[in-house]
Length: 313
Image (tube, rainbow, N blue to C red):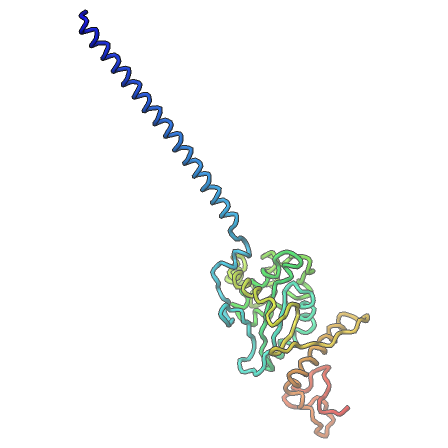
């Protein structure tokens, strides 16, 4: 082999070695870049996943989520958010405001003793009633029975004002109303069981669906937000305009439930008569010479238990 060829071969060999080293170097650089890129992607993916998880964890759920859900107002309501429940003759000149909470035991007691009198006054057109329903007992005693029952009342009101009044009476009834410490009405099944006792709601599939789906949950939250309206923070409360009406207290003495109910009803009538004047027809018992204290004006006469306003004694 000539010296020239030997030198040429050595140069070629060195070039091949250099090229191989360069190729290996580039390969190693590429590998490192891929590792770094993969690590960055992994970190970003992890960060994104954690961020999404945190975001989901912070999203409101349950009744808090209902505050942000689409508002569906029940029929037979008024006001921007449908929170004005006004029931009665639209031509009635006066409006009595009633504030209640479905879990409230005192509200249940009022309904059981005096609910029929209130409903009769509404029917007679003596006054309209605006019901403001609270749910503050949920916060005090825990649970969601007040809000859940209020949502169901919205579904009943969507059927008719009569269905609303009858369903409310059933929820407050001795048969169904639970101890305020028990969150019985937090279960839809219990609300539907009570509704089965109301003719207007029994077998009403649309009503049942609204209760199960929570159609009026957002509305119930809007109603609950009225807590403190006109300064009212306890139930039941009665107002005429900005005036708070107060009933006589029932004496602390032993009596039957029937006696208690009769006295509570008489106290309510007295309070209403004092504020709105005697009920229509109570002046119909003027002495006609026949000694009939009840009068003969269409049989309206004086309500049972009420004093004849035409008598001096």
